[in-house]
Amino acid sequence: MEEMICLVTGAESGLGYAAARGLAREGATVVMVCDHQKRARKARVKLIGESQNPNIDLIIVDWFSQEDIKAKANEILHQYHAIHVLLNLAEAYFPIRKLTGSGKERNFAYNVLAPYLFTNELSSLLMAADGARVLNLTYESHRLGAINFSDPGLKYNFSIRDAQRQVALARLSWAYELNRRLAGTGVDVHAFSTGARHPATIKQVPSFLYWTVKLATRFWERTSEESINTLLRLALSDDYERLSGKYLFRGQIIKSSPITYNQEFNQQLWETCAAHTESSIVAYQEIQAMLLS
Image (cartoon, rainbow, N blue to C red; front, side):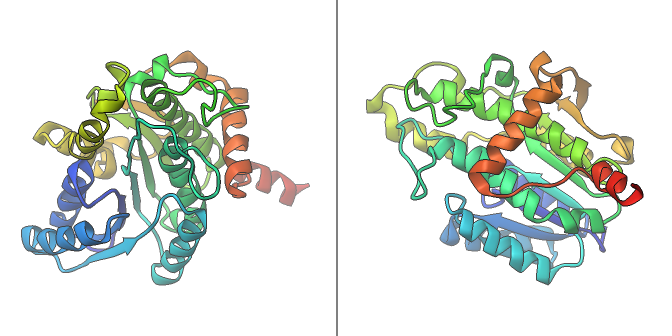
């Protein structure tokens, strides 16, 4: 574990912080990738104290800015020789539809495009680890989700419930496609759910509850001992070694929604993300075929 480098997004609070603490206690170098500078700095100091591990680094990134995501990924590329574990845990949901500075709907930009782009930009370090694991947080609500490829920003039919369901489906779908593209590289990719229900899946949120829901979505994450132990087992245990492209619910492999096994659907989502980020990964097997031809 002392030679492992683990990146945890959303590590300043909730499940992200708990996961970072667990990895740090195992002796790994933990890179906290956070978007709230003040909160993240306090969390880093607390994490070092609780884990007695000084090898805790901090990267501050603006998940709404693709330029900043690429810049911070480039810093990581120059600072580390490999990434052994990447936990995509950062998430935030916004009940009112607004666009980012680059014209992307905030829920889709923060929860789908940002981790997609960040993971793509770091793919070379994942492959360099010879046995890396990527885990995408998602939810059972993906089964009720749909993706409007012509309007992923839900311009004409927005609700926080539908936005969250779309995110859950998209994070699972691109995890499967990432797994396909990295097949043969030694990188294992999974989507996982702790079993918790996201507040946005319960009902449409009235505008007068905006700040209540915004606060709740920051602190509602699953921090039970069971959830944390399950996540750490997925990230570190030999039980999941060389097992890739799975959906894990509370640590158990189960079938995800049938649409997620449709390769054309997954590729279409990937291409949609690629078009919105100008970033992609050519399938490793396709590269091998080109070299042999």
